[in-house]
Structures are given as structure tokens and as C-alpha cells.
Length: 152
Image (tube, rainbow, N blue to C red; front, side, top):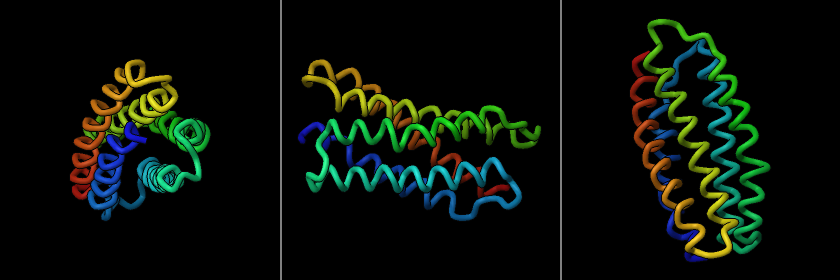
């Protein structure tokens, strides 16, 4: 339970940044609309799972399983669509940031799941380090995305 408490607050902050930063999203951008929809539902799913773990409805292994089965698959599918998208020349920088954010968030969740599955803190420590590094990078890019979306 202690391991979980160390990582809860950054996710709440990321969600706040993503929602606040993307309130005015561009119209007529199907890839960005898809991203926003998947991001919203995926973050809601993840937060719901965290609430279940906090209320002891699921344990750490249950949380890791749920992340792997309910959070990561739609995120990976959305990432593949973004990676395959044709990028308008005037939006190249936006898509660089978007692709980086999506990759960072995915890596953070994968590392978090691996850390939760670790048999002890020593084994989990490198996974938590990766999680914290990628989560911080995703936080920064979420803010940049919000700014870029407002400019569209």
C-alpha cells in the first residue's frame, strides 16, 4: 500500500493539466478529437481503478492486471492511429508533442504496472524510477499540448 501512495498525486495533477489545458480543443481535427476522447475515457478508467484500489476492492496485483487489460489496450490503439496519421505541415510541432506525450504516458503506465507486480521494493525501484521520469515528462507535454490546442 505504501508503494501506491507515492504515485497517486502525480496522476491527479496530470488529469487536471490535461483537462484544463485542452478545454478549448480544435474543431475538425479527427486525430485530435480521437485523442481527446480516448484520453478522457482512459484517464477516467484509470482513476476509477485507483479508487477501487484505495477502497481495497482490488489489490496491487488487481490494479496492475486492470491497467494491462483496461487502460493500456485502448491507449496503444490510439497511439497507433496517431503514429499513422498524416500530419499537416503547419501542425508538425503539435504532432511531435502529441506523439511524445502519448508515448510517455504509455511508458509510465507500463512501468507502474511492472512496479506493482514486483515481488519487493528492490525489484520495483527501477520501474518506479521509470514511472516517475516518464510521468514528469508527460506532465510537461500535457501542458504544452494544452497551449498548442488553444492556438489552433
